[in-house]
Length: 342
Ligand SMILES: [Zn+2]
Image 1 (cartoon, rainbow, N blue to C red):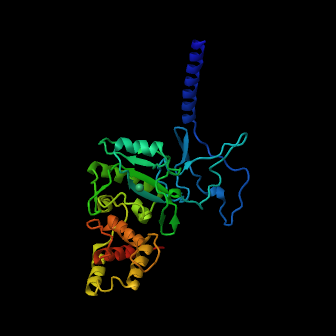
Image 2 (cartoon, rainbow, N blue to C red):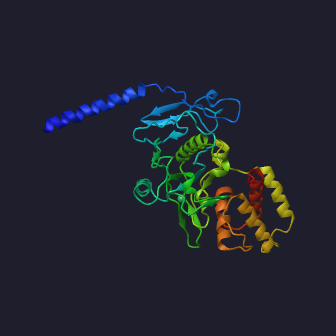
Image 3 (cartoon, rainbow, N blue to C red):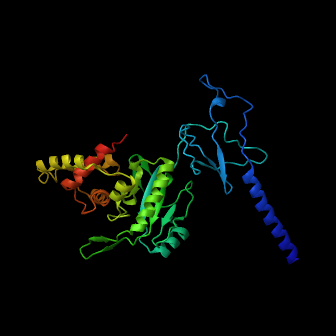
């Protein structure tokens, strides 16, 4: 009995391997639709090139970015196809692909785990939080994928940037193994540096994701940017400037523009107007314009201070005291010139 089961099991294994090989060899032949669609213009839909489909490990992909038919970089992971398989019917994907579509993946959010390697894996794979990718710090060349890019991972929590909220819906989350910070006697946070090899991994991963989904620089953010009152990660030692300079990733200000705002700020009496509600309102407006979710209270309230601190983690990491000094303010204004809200 056991032998019979073994033989059945073995033969079905061989059968499934063979059928997989056959499926791989099978060429996809596009069919002409039996009913011509009505179009507003002179050209028929049939004249347009049909998007090609490729298959890898049983998953189908459009090899053309069908939202932009002129752009085809032959990346196998462009627009993976998950579609219905209704019993007795055939779902056809190449006849009428709509150009009115975009990717759901519009943001890329970076985190640190505040845990060592082994605990990071356990927490992010076995508990109520997760991320699409986990960049370990074990010195190998592996990056762990925990969640499919087409699915939501639970990394952002309550979050907002510009007009968007709940960024779990629209983002890819990357967790980086790093122990976070320790808090000193005066409440000052001391953050842990990132390993050079780990930063290289993060850069390669981010570049790949950003290119495939056309994620703009304004949407490559820290967890602390999208949840400034709750989060500090990946903190002031995460090398945003290096990523910008060496890998063309994310946002950074132009020095000359920053300098002109700095000259303006220091030529006027920056300190004397510091507690003027009009000035505070202006600072809050600039922060909100840049992307932070913030109430325009006209007061240096806790949310405003934490938002300034989050901004400093990202763009003025030498001093993250949560005080809007002349340098921080000139950097903020320079960024608003370079990355205006559309
Ligand atoms: Zn985080």
